[in-house]
Length: 347
Image (cartoon, rainbow, N blue to C red; front, side):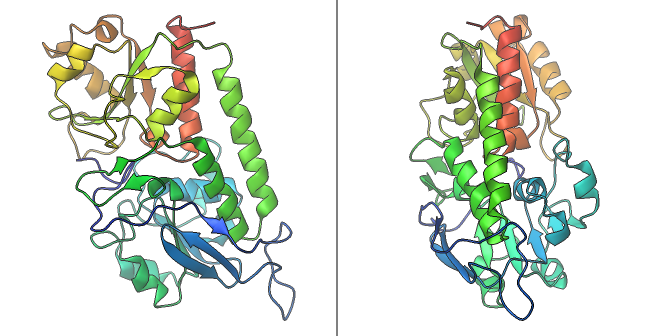
């Protein structure tokens, strides 16, 4: 099944849903403490995915163990506060190449807890509950006992049940507001709240620009992340649901709340979506990871090659990270909107 490039593999226990609520705010945009004192607004206490987290001062040696979280921190101009990153399966987001090059990557996959602790972190962030759980890097409490505060993206625990197998199920649709809140909350943790507000403003503007001139009310979409034998396709309410809902389109599998259910090609062909949104992955852990391999399969398989979207080659290619609930979701929305325009779904 897919790995942590988009959604958690497994987690042993349901973490209580809950959006981070700041009980103290960072002041100013430097995040630096006055000589002999502490930064304004610190210690900072917040509620994160069912845990109370206290950050004594703006982090200076943070480790981010999922790509989505790392790209948020890089977008906030915090490369100099990152001691290391890990779990990368896509190229870094455009515009962040230089910043990312200066941050050590301790593993392309999930690192060991020893590798993380070797960096002497003062803060640990992740995109998925499974990353900081048994079977991942290590449970959050293991780091917290050592005095290292941990943070998990609220998009992976807000209105989401991770207690079963697979990639979890949504109890309510995800919205970009949860992602925006994550950006602002991380900015507060690092003592740079103004940067968070600016980044969120930029992301909101991009969403509105992408939607302009698109009328997708008659368009049905299917999102294929990975695997040709038992494909992982998007359910109703994760990051692909954000894209679909923002554009007013329909996901042909909006009747399932599983994050990434495995569905037969016969069922896909029966629903016959207008447009196929295809994950273009750089990893090689599943069958048909790259978009080229996926398209080759679609156009040669006797079940899928008869689909309207295949015959008309209505394909939109996205990185795995653009199918994640993070700032790259905006990138995904932009590309899907551009594809719909190209296919004639315009006002």
